Amino acid sequence: HPIPSRRPPASVLSVQATDDGAHPSPGAGMCRRRTGYIRSGHRGGAFSLTGDVFLMLPEDRFVFGLSAFFLAHVAYIVAFLPGTAPISSVWPVLLLGIFVIAMTAVLWPHVGSLRWPVLAYEIVIVSMAWCAWERWAQTGQAGALLALVGGLLFVVSDSVLALDRFARPFARAGAVVLGTYYGAQWLIAMSVR
Image 1 (cartoon, rainbow, N blue to C red):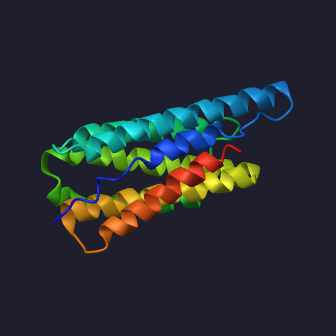
Image 2: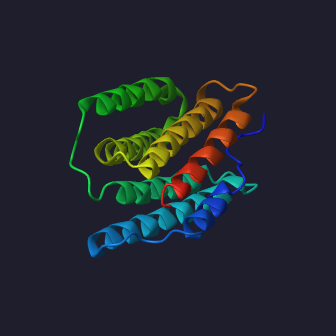
């Protein structure tokens, strides 16, 4: 069956969208934070584009794609963290932790030698979603809400991709993966405006 990981580079749109009209707000501290957010967003988009390219190659370059997306999520974490306190609520951490445990339980028997890379990826992607949650919970900004929804869509996209690739393939996986992936990249890109 076709592997839904061969996704067109929505990250190109993501990187471009962060450049279109993203102007820093007044105030030196705000300018530096906003510029850092934009730069980290660009890095996340660039690593995502790299991951897209690896996943679209005719040979299986899944590990390279996984690594590039891992770095994309690290960049998004760097974007979402500045200006937020360590933790506003324990509930998102608990829910995301339960999600990682459940995904690991389902995937672990099927991923073979990729167990530890897949687990590390699960942890970094839910950490990215949690950081987006914290940014929104602490700032209440519309852009932070866009980043949060984008982060959660990214978790859905990559979870469906992993389930379809390794554990339980299903017919509409490709549509779910692509729809949520495009939405995630777009919302994260728009969060810098």
